[in-house]
Image (cartoon, rainbow, N blue to C red; front, side):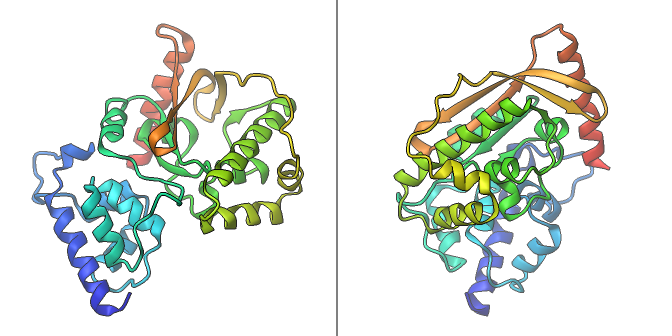
Length: 284
């Protein structure tokens, strides 16, 4: 990606940002708004990148956006497939093909997520790398927008014991890790040509003896059915026990985890309070 291509990439980003109605992507327009489309800070937040980096991209001063950044921008801008492919080409990348783990959230799935805007929802690709999380999820689990690289992978976070608000017994944690690694093995068998996936496996194997042990098991261990209830230790409201249902978008190989509480319960009240407190914190 040379300077001319970087300039064209930035010009295209600015043009597409200006055409996006804030309400269409869940952003409050406000009464005194001057911008017709999204503000730079709003697009950056939706894409999970810094406003400074987006500024450099739009001004043609950043010449090597990764495929992850391009995909995040395409998703935030709600681009059609042809426009998404064009954005990849302008960034100097080939658009992902069928042999690459998809991280595309198609418009129909995005509309489903929009309808769950008051419910904690997180979306992972088939490698258990975080694709997107909504504001209620951030409020419940902690802000994920600052996570970069391997920090966004659930297997990495679990096996390297990065901070988590989910409460597991040692046995539950061990079985959760085994399920994640077994699922990654299946993903690797479906996408043998994906270099990023092979690099993820190598990074995990080189950093976690537990991963290497699980990865080398020819037959996955017999595991009890995973619990559909999770307990979250929230720093402001205490422990909340919620239903966690993970939905598989088969055609796009995505996993969508949705957290809910039975109406009228103490857990429902704590979840609502966590959402209010978390939203206030993220807006400060």
